[in-house]
Image (tube, rainbow, N blue to C red; front, side, top):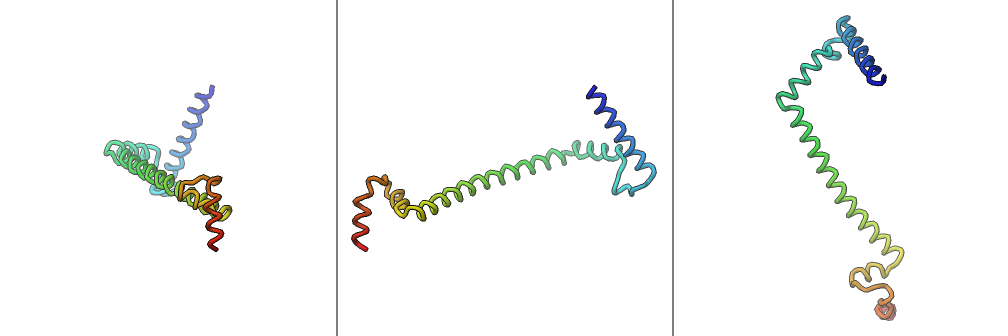
Length: 115
């Protein structure tokens, strides 16, 4: 039932399209006939314009997505580090020296005495 409905809709759509083309309601450049469109579609498939164009577009999509992943990760880490510095000044010192926060007590105490 559903397949018949789809086929009927497609047949009616293409029929109305062809009728509008034959009546010349729109110029051919704006609304070509269904047969002209099918011919152009077949032509770009056979001369490989469509597959090459799709391949180039997919390559750009992958490149852009890869760049966004790298930049997003770097921005995320940078933002995390900056927020850590503002919330906890010892944050960067602990990360730089590789010392856990609970073992930094003597270091921080020495820094406080110097000020």
